[in-house]
Amino acid sequence: MRTCLVVDDSSVIRKVARRILEGLDFQIVEAEDGEQALEICKRGLPDAVLLDWNMPVMDGYEFLGNLRRMPGGDAPKVVFCTTENDVAHIARALHAGANEYIMKPFDKDIVTAKFQEVGLI
Amino acid sequence: MTPLDYEFLRKLLKDRSGLDLSADKQYLVESRLLPLARRANLPGIPELVQKLRSGGEQLTTQVVEAMTTNETFFFRDKIPFDHLREGILPGLIQSRASRRSLRIWSAACSTGQEPYSIAMCLREFGPALAGWRIEIVATDLSQEVLEKSKAGLYSQFEVQRGLPIQLLVKHFTQLGELWQLSADIRGMVQHRQLNLLQDFSHLGKFDVIFCRNVLIYFDQETKASIFERMAKVMEPDGTLLLGAAESVVGITDAFKPNQERRGLYQINPVRSPRGGAALLPGLKVVAAR
Image (cartoon, rainbow over all chains, first blue to last red; front, side):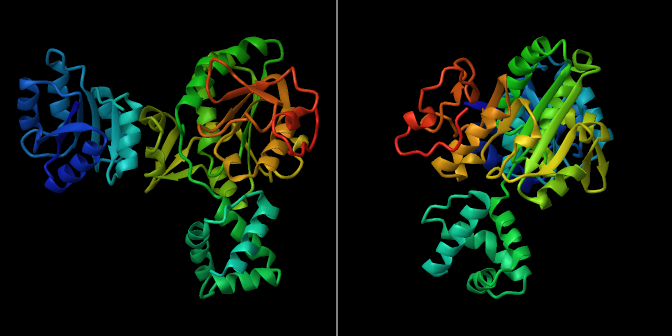
């Protein structure tokens, strides 16, 4: 079973994402911020990361930079999932190494389409 | 809804659009037409049917549009567009090198996601198609969806279903809550209202025809008629793309399945003497090639 790290400071969003992704046969690991997510990745890299942008301690953008610099850190498919819904943020995320980008609010169809797009399904 | 009202609606939809509703689709009719009845200040379906029976032409058009408008999204099913990029277009770029023109038809284009996905695929070929005359003809029965398609304006939900983020950034501009396709991509698509039940020979010849997830609603005879007429507007080496759950097999032999790429069909140069009738006894072939 593939693993997906869900990184979001909102427990509601994590719960919704977990329900959708478990339905797509992913095993879910949760983190509340970038720092927690980075610690989890140091113990073992997931297949996918669903990543919020604005979080306390370490934001999604900074986490992504750290992840991509780790040995093997270019392997996980990273899908941003954020309320930062403007072209400038999207372009910045892609430049930093994001594979896809979900603009909140989202639903199961969008998550499925995006995960299909990056070859996770 | 009374059985008589349902039969009336079934016949009306069959006559106007070819939509072939089975006997157990009352729920679909109710879910699509009840909002329409309310908008027309009618309490329910029986009153809507009563008004239709008295010949309300505008209301009839709205009913047909409400029942035939289907969900769509960018790069729907993905694989047909992989075929387009990897097989069909490279082949056409070679075979049409002297005439430098391509014509693609998106039949039943709905709100435009299919023809615009085709246009974005073509743009990926860049210099290989520079200077070519490219026509993407997008047709639909519904004027309402054609207007939406022409505007090229999509909600945040719509642009997130099937459209890779790189293409969103490249081809769309954010307009408040909406996203608009660039004038370049919109300009590649010509829109025309068309009922597939009626003659479409005036559209001219096509190299590629996308006709996906629309014929499933038609009966066998109507499908056979449409396939026969599509074969006549298809270049001899052209390609027809159908939806994942659709096929020509058992309906017509005007087309034959592509052996290497599923969902693709080519003109059949070797037809049985009786055409589609040989494949499906009792089927009336509308036009022989």
